[in-house]
Structure formats: C-alpha cells, structure tokens
Image 1 (cartoon, rainbow, N blue to C red):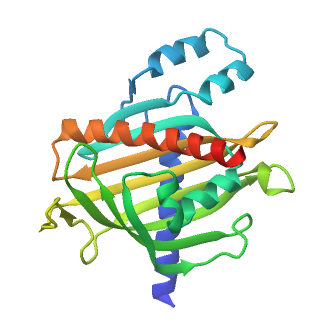
Image 2 (cartoon, rainbow, N blue to C red; image 1 turned 135 degrees about the vertical axis):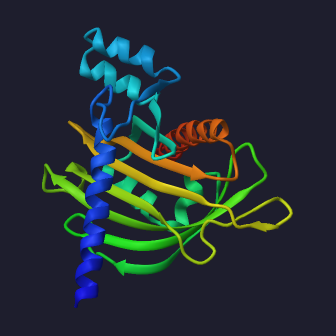
Length: 259
C-alpha cells in the first residue's frame, strides 16, 4: 500500500512539475521563472514586435499557423527549449497522434522506433481520466551518426473542459526520461554501443484549444536535453532543428490527411 501511495504521489508531482514548466510558454514572451532567462531564436523577436504593436488576434493566429515562436536557455547544466505555434487538428486528434507509439514516424523523422514497455494506467476515456506508460525509443541525433536509446515515462491527461465535446478540451503529455537498463546508451553508424549519459529530461506538450476554431490546436512545448555525446553548441542546434521539424511535420501531415 505504501509503495502504491508513493508511486501515485511521484506521478502527480511529475505531472504538476511538467505543467509548471510548459506553462511558461503561455505568456509571450515567457516570464522568467526557476532561474531560466529565455533567449528568442530565429524570427521570434521580429514576430513578437509585430504582436506587441497591436496586431489583432485573428491576424496573429494566422501567422502562428505558419511560424513557430522558439526560446532557448540553460537550466540545470543542460539546454532547454520553449516553443509555441498553431497546428491543424483538434487537441484530441493531436493527443492521439502524440500518444500512439506506432505513429511517431508520422511527425518525427528522427525517431527510429518507439514501443510501449509498461502500461501503468490505461484510461478508457482520456477526456475524463489520465493515462500513464513507460516507452522505449531510439532516436537518430541530427547532424551526427549516432542514435540514442532512451526509456521515458509518459503522463497524459485532459486539462480544462470548455464544451461537452472533446474539441473544447485541452490536453497535456508530460515525458520524463528514466535511467534503467540500456536506457541512455547510444550507437554509432557501425552499431557499436557507448554508455554515455543521454537524456531528454523533460518533454512536455500542451495542446490548447483555439477559441472558436475546433479544427486548430495551439501547441506549446518544453524540452530539456542532456547529452554527453555531443558538445553544448551542437545540442543547441539539434534542439532548434528538432522543434522546427516537429511543427513542420505535424502541419504537413494534418493538411495532407484533411485533403
């Protein structure tokens, strides 16, 4: 009983910590918190100046369907990234896509494979409950010949109900890497394993309903990458590339699906 109690508390803490981190991206620009000083990347500064000049929300939403706001920083000795943009599809549709381990190739070309290794809670209705599982994934590292094998606990839940149907709900998926067995190992292009520390400490996706737009989702992401197999400057480049590629792939996939 004590073991179940502490496990439940640990998972709740995981959820609330993940929610606190990704919620930094709800404000534009993100507020300083937890000692994180955010630096805008790419076109983010230019876009924010246009928004602060008094752009109407309809025009801003149109821009956010094409562009991505990205901020970066250092936190606990590793790279962190915060991003925000609007993608096609309802929050529930996007949740189903990101949660299903058999569909990772639809939006993540760097993922060699992902499988569910342990189902902790399997919700029959995610709109009113939570789902928790442990997954094992292998991911190619951009700009290198390496791939990393990582185990991650994933916590998925609905947040706020605005309507009676699923299109009015917002969802969150919190991911936290685990150190277990071969997790953290990576291989080079010759298949040789190296036991260096590789983690995606946090991978949090907040799927927010867009007011009066049931077929759109505002996607806010927070990720923290810690890797000993690539230098910090390359980790920064990899993180930015991964964020941009994810938004681009989801947008292309949803538009092709809807057409």
